[in-house]
Figure 1 (cartoon, rainbow, N blue to C red):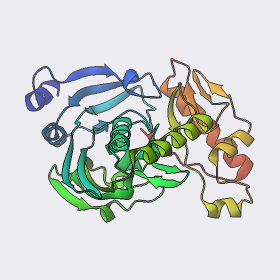
Figure 2 (tube, rainbow, N blue to C red; figure 1 turned 180 degrees about the vertical axis):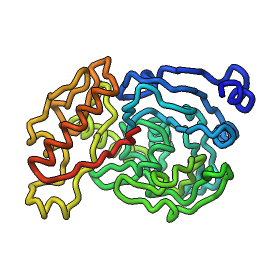
Figure 3 (cartoon, rainbow, N blue to C red; figure 1 turned 60 degrees about the vertical axis):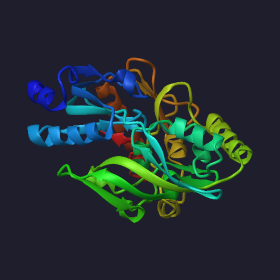
Length: 311
């Protein structure tokens, strides 16, 4: 299998039993059976074809945030998406249309657009990961409400059969923490956005306010993958007579703040954050997740659903 992958992707480009800990914000002690770093559009197409040809599973890894791995080894081909490209398509004094590759770091995109007076990403200051992950998960900010997908007009995807297609925004079926990519597992190549121009000073102020709120309310400077579980719906809140839709509240009231299994523990600052002290093992994470779900269900009758991608 290793030789077949090298024939398709290039000699010396494929690694075996690659440790992934440094590529994951949760720093889980896990590895990839086969590993490849894709640096271009064509290489992303090639890895899909390699997966189809060899009939092995394919997993695309972006910034390593919003993902929790519960296996000692991720079987198949793990591809680090380092396809980083941004290109202006149309621009005038009021608007700009530009393309951004799926491997483009979100922190870089936010900083650049704020500096350039491009409205639409400033509230995502402090958001980790890549454009691909942000679109796939429909990353959001709620103070005020702002989704990464708000200004998307179309995108280019690799289909399951390896061909490339162009799709409009409606194709993604965006809603809270969801896009159709979660179901289809198609690979985003580029996203095309149409944004308004605005005063960089106004955008900078918004970005600073969003970042300050994140720093105050969320866990930073620790090994975590962000909010682990989705907040409950308003319908569930009302049916269970709860004061909030916050899953962090439910986990807290279930008495689990600072509870730990191995090196994984529930943050004392925000109970919807799981933190790795340094040597968290996949099996310990599985145990901790089972305990959280069981305790919350027993106390509130609520079934928790992961916000992060769990593999």
